[in-house]
Image 1 (cartoon, rainbow, N blue to C red):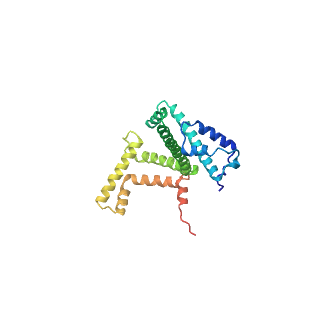
Image 2 (tube, helix red, strand yellow):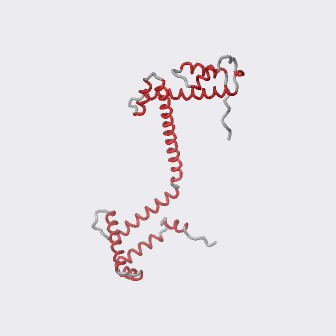
Image 3 (cartoon, rainbow, N blue to C red):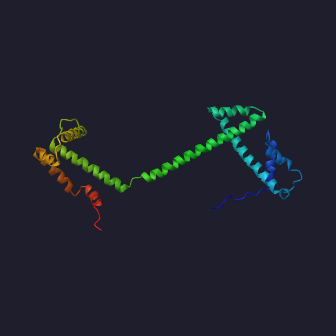
Length: 240
């Protein structure tokens, strides 16, 4: 991976930096040191390695200051500033040196918070995007489930019609609810009376509806439109 391109300073960069620092209401020590080394410098060749390092540091401070002033302008345009923003605005109204540098420190923290929010939002959006890819349903699987659900619904409707179970209920959902209630109660009765599987089957066979239900279910299973046949085939173990 390629690293950051090395910064090559020009005389124009130095002149712009001088103009910026001279316009500051208060100067940092590093900025004053920069001004102090300027006498006798007529070209970039006159700057030593340590001088150039100082120029780069001051240039960094300049860029940070410009970002902070842009943030201050944004805060000043807010119709309903937050408590933190109001404190920054109060500092901006003062003209003493301590308030000036405290304002810059506050703006630095403010920008860091904004960057963190942007990073959090970016991460959240990227996570949503990859989650949507992972959770995206295969169209063929969805169609298969839709066919199975439709077939189950048709089967239930047919069994309701054949057996007449809870026909006095207002709708099929209520009928299904009461059938499950019956099944739950029967399960408790079977467990309480220690009914074996064979006894349960023999009891069911004596019930008038058992033959009707079995015939209907067998018919649904053998029907060529039965979508569960494909699912059953996919789960058959390999013989190899």
